[in-house]
Image 1 (cartoon, rainbow, N blue to C red):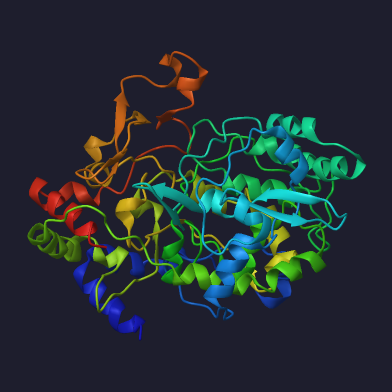
Image 2 (image 1 turned 60 degrees about the vertical axis):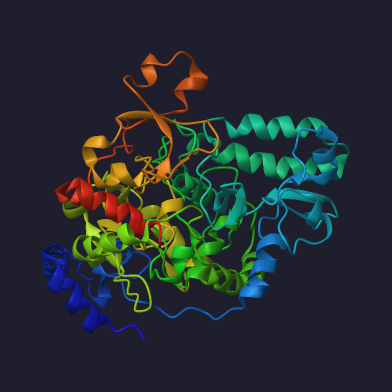
Length: 487
């Protein structure tokens, strides 16, 4: 059983960093207001978490088997393209990557699409969670591995309107129009500068801005101020980390009932509390499935002697924040302050400086916030590193293509492009094969080339910070890389 006080002492004894971090936690906490200062949903301080240890909170039990079935077969996103129009277009891919347990029409569709019959009687096809949370590695589709290849640089309105050219009849048109209008509403806020980065935060805030918090009814007109049109980039974290994490997101947001927060992904189409309750009924099963996931095993050769050496280096320099692995594994669930970790601060600062309080207030007033809260902290969670070798690119914004560069900051490219060669995995550097460029987007030949360049000079895209590996000798870094292959 996890013994936090004992583990905390042991880790702190190994690390001056953690000792300093925990010592300042109380000073950096946001003090709670008195009971007569307003309700929790109105107090800005109610939307913050302190730095340091993130304690576990009760989670509703669920069935992993039922959760998998719900994930791949149930319609938690209830609006989309009419299936008949989908077939007429002829431009959508067949189910090249099939998942076991897909039933009915879903067995015919790509793994990231789900079909269901709407209340109007029209069969529709919608994107499901695996669009972002499944990806290929070494020729294998891995459920739970973040998809870092999605292209959000295009205008979603154009794609949605193009899908309407194949609808026929009043009922089909109405179903398509509902989906297309929602896509048009969020489109200005989810367009990124670079292929691969994810605008998940902006997408969620844009949906909140169009919904009544108490009824969840959709409004074509904005009800609260929307997010800025330039989304901050985030990398899609692997699902198997949720087995250990007490908070869901990079900034320690996502506290309380994780299952309730997970179904925020359905808010594109969920138009009433009744609909939200129906999805929430099986959300604990999906969470149980996600918490049951194990990381993939490293598929290539490992130098076990070198890995053993790397384990010692890791325990001395890395485990205080990222935990230990093996039979007596521990994970400290620490959120580390910006002044300590030094990584791009935009995501965390925006979350705690008041710019997003209207969205936290919306959450608190809504069905989703009854047992769950966002409550970010002024820092980033140091994640568990199970299967980390498979999860390039690195840092919360995906700005570093390899672990080798993460451990030696001087090797991080300022401008880089992911290699298109196959395989694109670099087993020496542990991450993506890539090309370092001497110029940024302004020097690219055309628009298609520009959007493939990761430009670390853009706001929110910096590859700064996490320089803890710089103190290691070259041989020590090589040993740590080999050890990470065993996790």
